Length: 79
Image 1 (cartoon, rainbow, N blue to C red):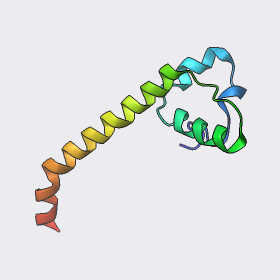
Image 2: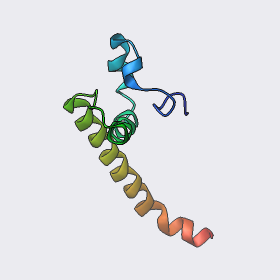
Image 3: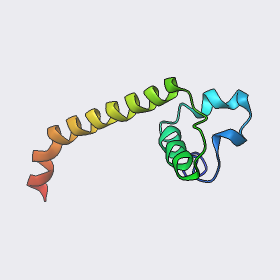
Image 4: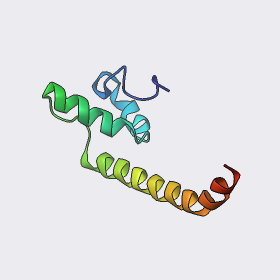
């Protein structure tokens, strides 16, 4: 998983042709935000990708909370 997320590499080091593919990973944008903030360099990601990443994260949070709410009672009974 570490090789698919930009922990070990920067988006800037990839060819431009791969940027669109890599940006489908919603972890790329937050990782780049943190690294660029710490290093003081501009964000190499467009606002559309930031919105996509936020949307995916909010959607997954909603899905996870919905599943948790639905299954919480059954899991607590088994514990």
